Length: 123
Image (cartoon, rainbow, N blue to C red):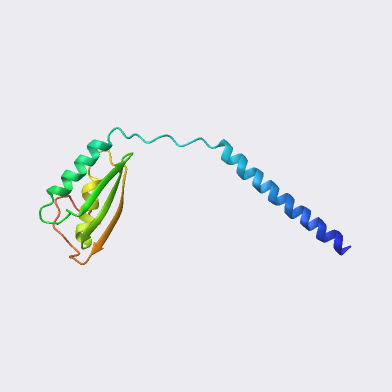
């Protein structure tokens, strides 16, 4: 009798696994492919973000490289302090057409608050 229950448990276990795999593959087959992001404004966004970063004379943002892909701004490089980091991100976010900003910035020692032309978030 014990052998019967063990084999029945294996069959049920395999059946549950098969049912799970079928449901996962069926759901993924119904999913539509993601639409291609609009890259028509990427050149303008790149220029505008770079210009805003260069215009920040009081805060050194010269070690930042900017890339744009489908309205997503990617910031690479290093800044001196949290204040400069916030200033760089804020300037990138203010450019029209930017969907989001992803920063890959290394934050070195520096001031917590830095002078920035971009308006500060009230929070």
